[in-house]
Image (cartoon, rainbow, N blue to C red; front, side, top):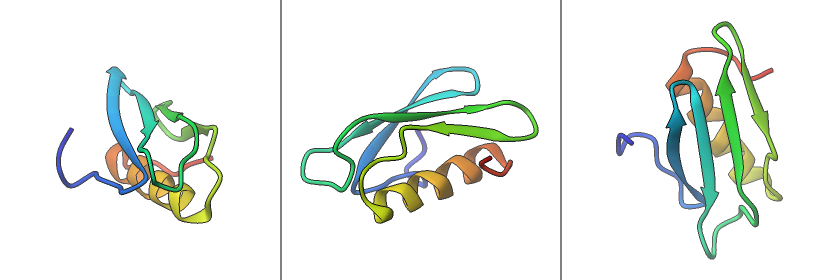
Length: 71
C-alpha cells in the first residue's frame, strides 16, 4: 500500500479489488481490526475502532483511497 496511506493506529491491506482490511497496530488507538468496502458511489466502513483518532484516520484514508464518501 502506498506510504501516503499510513496511520500510527493501523496498517492497511487490500484484500481484493475494492475491499480493504485495516489491522490494528500494537500500542495504537485501534484495539481490534476493521475494514472498508468501496461500493462504487459510497464506502461502507465496519468496526470503526475504540478511539476517535483511529476512527478519523480510518475515515480519511478510506475516502482518500476510494474518492467516495463513507456512509
